[in-house]
Amino acid sequence: MNGDFPGRGTNGGDWPSHPIVLAVEDEEPLLEVILEGLKRNGFTVDGVDSGEDALALISHSRPDLLLLDLMLPGMDGIEVCRLLKANPATAGIPVVMLTARDSEADIVRGLELGADDYLTKPFSLKVLAARLRAVLRRHRPGATAAGGDTISRGGIALDRSRREALVEGRQVDLTYTEFEILWLLASNPGVVHTRSRIVDSARGTEASITERAVDVRIVRLRRKLGSSSGNIETVRGVGYRFSD
Image (cartoon, rainbow, N blue to C red; front, side, top):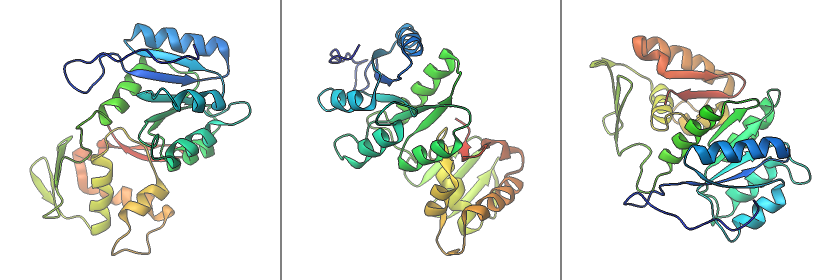
C-alpha cells in the first residue's frame, strides 16, 4: 500500500483492463477487505489511511477512480474532494464516497462538490465493484454523457433540438423544466443528482423553481411518464437518479 501505481494495461483502446483505484479509509481492517475484494474483481488497487496521503500520492500517480471515506482523521473526505475538484489537473478523477448511514448532509455536500456516487457502510463488495465499474463506464475515454441531441433509454426517447419526448413511442407534453430535469437524469444514468444541482440545471423560463419545488416537478413528470416512471429513482435525503 501507499506507493506508486503499477503501469496500465489496456483492452485494445484507451480503457485500462485493470482500472486503478485508490482507496482512502482509516479503518485498517476495512481497508484490507476493500483492497482484497477489489483485486479479486479485476481492479488494480492501492490504499492510504488519510486525506493528506491520498493527495500526495495523486500528485504524482493518477488513479482512474478515488474511493474516499468521508470520515477521516485530519483532513476529511469532503475537503479532499473539494481540493481535487478545484484543481484542473485532478478534477476529472471520478470520486465514489464511503459514508456512515447518518451522514446525509455530508453526502449532499460531496455530490455538490462533484463526487460521482456514494455507498453507505456496511456494503457488499459485489455491489461496491459493480458501482465502481458503472462510474468508470461513464468516464471511459470517448464516452459522452448525452450522445448529442438525442437520448433513448428505458423506454424514453428525448430529442433536445426538437424539445420532443416519447414514452414507448407515445409523445408526451413536458414543460421546459420537466424536459430539462428528465434530460439531466437520463443523460447521466446511475448518477445521483441533488435537488440544488437539478435546480441549477433546470432553471430557465421557470426562474422561480426551488429545491422544494423539484419534488413537485418530479411527481408530475412521473405521472406523465406512466409505465416508464420507475426509471426515476428517489435517493432518500439526497435527490434523484435515473436507473442505471
